[in-house]
Amino acid sequence: MRQLRNGVFSLNGREWSLLVACILAIIVFSVASPYYATSGNAGTVLRNSIELLLVGLGMMLLLAMGGIDVSVGVVMGLAAIGVGRALGAGVDPVLTAFVGPLTGALLGLLTAAVIVLGRVPAIVGTLGLLGVYRTAIFVLLGGQWLSGLPTGLTLLLGTTILGLPVAAWVIALAYLAVWIALRRTPFGLHLLAIGNSEEKARLSGIPVVKIRFATFIVSGALTGLAATFYVANYRNVEMTVGSTLALDAIAAVVLGGTSILGGRCSLVGTVLGVLLLRILQNGLLLTGVPSLWQPVVTGSLLIGVLGFEVLSNRLSLSRLGWASK
Image 1: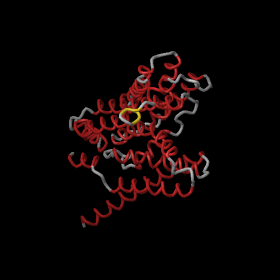
Image 2: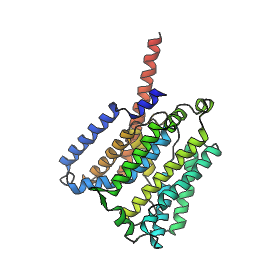
Image 3: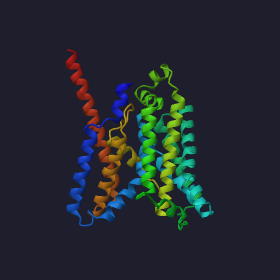
């Protein structure tokens, strides 16, 4: 268990490689486009990373546990509708800010009930819920955008504290809370143990059901929090909200070093994976590549990383086989 814990938090070659990749991508796009290396565009990249940093944090926990949730995009959409409706009804912006996380947590609870209690594989269960939630978005919006929302939430979350925007503080606190939970409480060891082998974790006396429920709820709350910032930033909710969010979150987290098979995660890697993904997407857009191709780039990165991990695992097993001889 000690080895697992250290593997989560120590910097390794993956994180350094991602940092170098971010720097190289910035240099390449700065040369390719005169509009890239500007303070305004840097702000755009960071703003576009807010929702993915929060959703990616929840996805990291799910993958480390050996789970997954491909419905996070529509969960954010439903939470965003709740936030938008509250704003439109004149609810105080401070109270409205909690509507998103609460809605996300409730949807996470529903997801956990389907998967954990129903014993449905996570990929199958969340695919089913994706269809249900997507239809719910269509019904709630009536086929129209929710637009022209009041500016109260935008002004609230757009303020700065000690020179940093509220979003930066919220994201930092979210990552700090997860770091403490993983490093300083039994939750972290239990989560990774379940990701390595759920059956062995259960036989060891780990409360598997409670940990799995808690992780889905936390992931849902983080996705709902992302919805709060989404509404504050754009002041509308469109029909296709979050359509590529699940792909982006999984790609960023896996790119950051979290194992899609469970048992390993990286907070630093998740942040760098999100930034690299957004840097690439923004750079491609400014160099004239249509946004239609962004999912292609994201999917290719995901396939490439997974292929590399499979090849690495095979080489490791091969070496172990030779060593045993």
